[in-house]
Image (cartoon, rainbow, N blue to C red; front, side, top):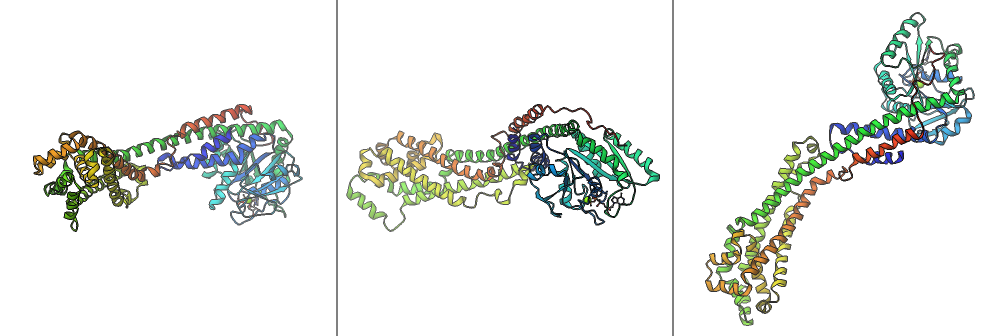
Length: 570
Ligand SMILES: Nc1nc2c(ncn2[C@@H]2O[C@H](COP(=O)(O)OP(=O)(O)OP(=O)(O)O)[C@@H](O)[C@H]2O)c(=O)[nH]1
Ligand SMILES: [Mg+2]
């Protein structure tokens, strides 16, 4: 069930720039890492050996301490800072199999040799150590080396118990306290070592640290104070100094119940923190979805506006001015239309063909005037919509982050697409006329000429105001055509026919325009598509987060204060 949560987390992206996004990305990554490194393997094996992660500032003596506890030089110590670059895990030989198996911290490559590669985990068996409890010597937590710091944080998130090592000189440093606070908030079991304390100042320093711990509600954590001393030839601390620590861990190792209590407390704390993190992720995901919706709406509104402009442009008669009107009048006035329509017999048709051969026919010119008029309208509308959408995003921080200069303009291929669209539409109108009027006796005889003329009349009618319909006829009249000619037109096609065809043609045109504008809009919507708006990621995360509660209940995790009595500690 926590696997579902894991995939819900990794499926959720936070691509939009929002205050909550960067934090969510980090939290998501940290939570996923902790699930893999610790929670999933730990929940699967509650009885696996307890892992003590030894953390602290560089040079605090962590490696020296681990070596001293297992009474062998397992981890290199040194004067070069930082010394430990790759984690070293020491355990009883019988526990080696579990750690080598790689369930825990699966991202680290197991090795038996000393390594400086932070992607490895060196495993060492130490017979001096009791079974059931292992130490992991971690790189420093406040390192100048980024990889060290990140690794230390990851390792601490995989610990059943954090053993913090600090020194008389360093104990007030900020970073360790930051981590200690995190540990306390999570309920992680902590023990502390105050190392290298000068004898004369021992009480004073230890008291001060105890005060600081109490102030952070960490007063209950076991604190071991180790006096300043010389390390022996092996680099180990004198046994009498490490004895309290060794026996404290020895008792823990020997007591399965106490170990289990430590594991459960830390696990419960981590699960509780996980729940909180998941809720925060869900909020951030909701933020993303709401913002994506807002941005999508801003862009869509701009293109809806463009659609309306086209619609109005087709209705308010503006397209019937200028070139189109001139060509229409020419078409009608020179008599091409009516010659065409009146071409009842073959001979006449041939004459018409002869008349127009060798020079651009007014019909042809009308058709291209219509085309360029519409293309111009579409280009203008696309440009305006792009600009409006651009402004709509520019005034929104998340939108501004997504903008690229070319979004302010229509797509580079818009002119070609608009031209193709209009030509397709014109072809469609002719097809429409052909099928609609195909049955009429007259059209059947005059075929292509009539279809063409009728088609042009329909296209012009599309440009007319509602009141003007059927302007195919009215414009014809206005263009100075004779009443007789109008009668011919009416007689052949009928008033209603043009009206109906114009309505159909207008709808067809608007469908094509919608498609064109949708393609333009898509340039804005595409970057939003990575946000799972429809899937309501917040809900999915919250539901998956309920698995955390079930995991806690199933393992009967209880928080009973500090389960490890600080006996032997100061
Ligand atoms: N005199 C003295 N030297 C110590 C003591 N503890 C550690 N040292 C020395 O201090 C230096 C650093 O000790 P390490 O154990 O390497 O420190 P560390 O915390 O592991 O350091 P990083 O791996 O860099 O994080 C070594 O040279 C140790 O020999 C001590 O109690 N007394
Ligand atoms: Mg070290």
